[in-house]
Length: 74
Image 1 (tube, one colour):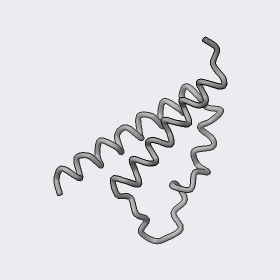
Image 2 (cartoon, rainbow, N blue to C red):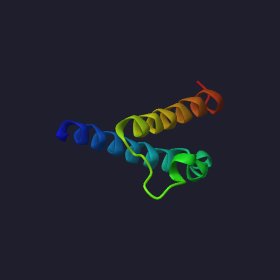
Image 3 (cartoon, rainbow, N blue to C red):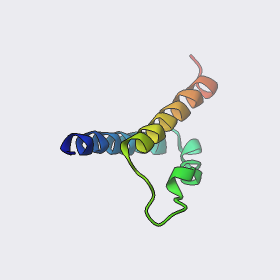
Image 4 (tube, rainbow, N blue to C red):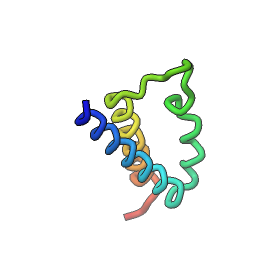
């Protein structure tokens, strides 16, 4: 159990850091993060296990990568 919590803690930290980066570096896409379904749980106790949070982190990374590909020049 402690190892799972360590991994989840690392994922939460990475999500926090990436969200902060998006807020500062890409404010035009930051506004869309609040609309993401993961931030709007439809139940009293949403499932926030490692798999769900890793998927959210991967989505954030993809969002930034895609934005850079389409909006930044080389």
